[in-house]
Amino acid sequence: MIRDAKMGARSSLDGRWKLGVGATFIYIVCVLAFAYLTLGIVFLCMIPFIGSAFESVWNVVVYVCYGLGIFVISSSLVFGFLHICMKLARGERTSIYDIFRYLHTAKQTWTTGKAVGLVSLYTCLWSLLLIVPGMIKAFSYSMTYFILLEKPHYTIRQAMEESNALMKRQKRKLFLLILSFTSWILLCILTCGIACLWIIPYICVTISQFYLKLSQTEQISV
Image (cartoon, rainbow, N blue to C red):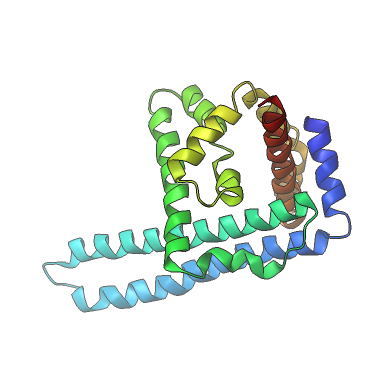
């Protein structure tokens, strides 16, 4: 399955690398731009309370709101990016503007932020036991976002449960799949991140292919 997923990803990206690289670039630029622009607003909000009795409390409130804002926006962009990767994996039409599709309404933005937050929370709670249980659960919930993309009527809990069921006896394969990109990740480091523009879409489309093959196998077995 690992070889098939990687071959499928290369085939899906053939002639469409520009879209994958462009989506990666826009995602990185948008997250950084939003973080730096809103940081200026944060400092402006803090100025009126400098030297006051509420300065410390207000600073905490402002920084928490700032962190939550970045988290929610970046979560929506992640879903948009994965939507593009899924479309590429399926060989379907998509646009670079689809990266913003989950920012169209407050409900979509809230749902994507809640999904990433819950998966992260559950993974962190399992990690409190030991690193290994945390890693196992991270792989168990790894297909949650793809399931929500395919089945938007699902609740987040339903998607997490289906991901957990889908990844039974498949976690090792996904681990080995990710491990097979080690040399590519080293290339990212050696090129100061420039190669990430090509490697990130390659990895994400490969994992999308992995999910599609898993879901097809599950449907056949049922």
